[in-house]
Image 1 (cartoon, rainbow over the protein chains, first blue to last red):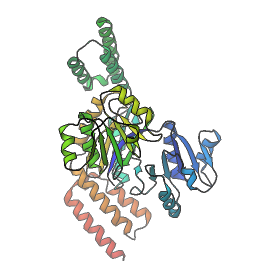
Image 2 (cartoon, rainbow over the protein chains, first blue to last red; image 1 turned 90 degrees about the vertical axis):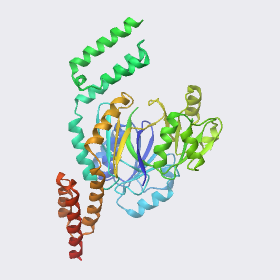
Image 3 (spheres, chains in turn red, blue; image 1 turned 90 degrees about the horizontal axis):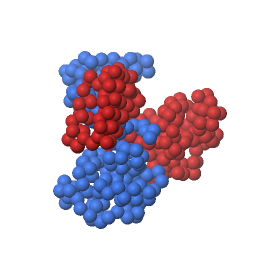
Image 4 (cartoon, each protein chain N blue to C red; image 1 turned 30 degrees about the vertical axis):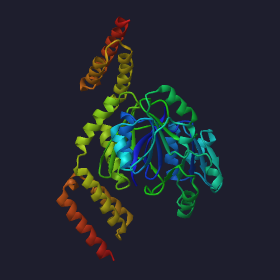
Length: 207
Length: 207
């Protein structure tokens, strides 16, 4: 499997999850955060999924999956513990559909890396199924290195970048300034505030 | 944009790249490594793309893009420097298609995180377009932490995992053993070889 990491916007996309157990439950949580439209297809569902269904945060079809259920799906997640069902779904999935087969990284064409977010910063770690435990360990290590301060820091970099782009500085000066902001000292919130004020005054002067 | 990181297998998938400049050239390289079937659509192409086309590693349609060119594409990459063309492509892209608009992370529904690989280990870093420079910096930092030794280490973990799964150890013992292999001492190649030998003997004894 020759995989590449992609950041995918699942907002407003139809995602079909086949199965209603633990694995489905875990996926549902992270996909709802991403703003996806979820349909869970399963005769039975875990309590956590049921609650979300009762809150109308997702659809539930209380049935076994049929081919039509996959129509128009942006991403199909196969998460039953019945390998016959799993294989059948893989077989009838539309060409080009994104397909994740839980627990079988080499089937389907998508898998979910271990990942964490700090505000806009997002880091995904995968070992291509070789060692999920190592992915999780590295995730935890990185989560410690890139702690909460990075959420604010990335917001600061974003705001600074907009201000610098809007300024009358030439391209070279803009690039140098953007590079300078990568210095560790700018992780300091006080320095961030000072810098934003300075950049704002720079923009005003330029006008 | 509510994005989630996905590992996507692009092997044998049709990917259409609109544009033949620097950005297209960079994408082509990484996607070919992933085993994708590439079609570049552009009246002109950079030397690097031309070489790959001459080596029959990709298709080239020497023309401006038309709607039909997008048929059956798994992923569409819009990389012209003409925003009218870019907008037109975005408009006619099939629903559910994966769409990347180079330099405009908030358009399209896919973007490419900064990433590096060490064998099976793959790490992707994104700031959701807030600071591509920070993504690149973090990538370099992590590439230093998770150096070449990790490529071999993940291969070792993979082989060990297969051997442990094939052994007659009970689930609990298997999990404990897998956890133990995450200790840093196993980054040592000599210890890796010893461990593989030991696991093999364990499997033989179990039969």
